[in-house]
Length: 251
Image 1 (cartoon, rainbow, N blue to C red):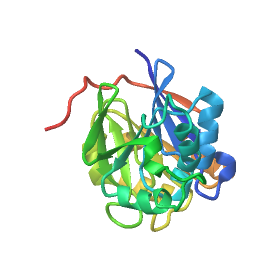
Image 2: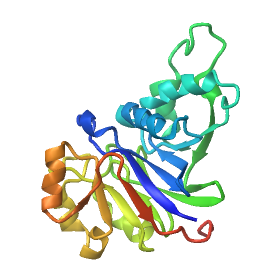
Image 3: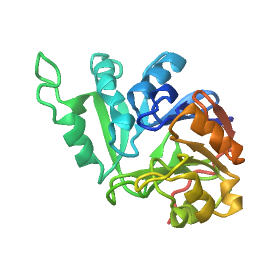
């Protein structure tokens, strides 16, 4: 069984030419789980796979990460084969924000009679969730207010930080098995996002060697990050992953 991580987009909210930050965990070249669903990310997903995703994990509800869910509602709600079956894995503390941002819009369809959630199967998650026979760890990250943004781990294979400042304490626990680490990194950091100086200061060289950087501001910024000897993802990059460890929920 072969595993890979396909980047749909790698840009910050302003870098639309790089696509909204999102990726798909693939098993045997088939999509297993989409991570975040911004507008550009959904377009990239549909272009590559030719059909809507069956499962999405939401890291947080900034619009460059969830705006595609509005389109996904319409594609799913009016498809009898998919309506109510698309799994949305959402951290429990994020559900109210998603409700207020997208689901609470009055009259989700003009004809009435539909709730936004009708198109999806909501799975609220806390420390993790089972999907397709595998356990995925979920952990809080540092992006705006506490308990509003989360990362994802498939043990032994990959870690996705989502938008975050450096999180050495979390990666010490959730990236301790040699995983590839897809990490938020801009050329210059700010109170909500990591900059390359932040990562170089706070992470040991062994951990940095496993990082692939995304959520940066421009093509030129990506080249500047590469010039500092970092691995940097580009849109449509596919990275081969180590197979995940045998499915097991931690104690």
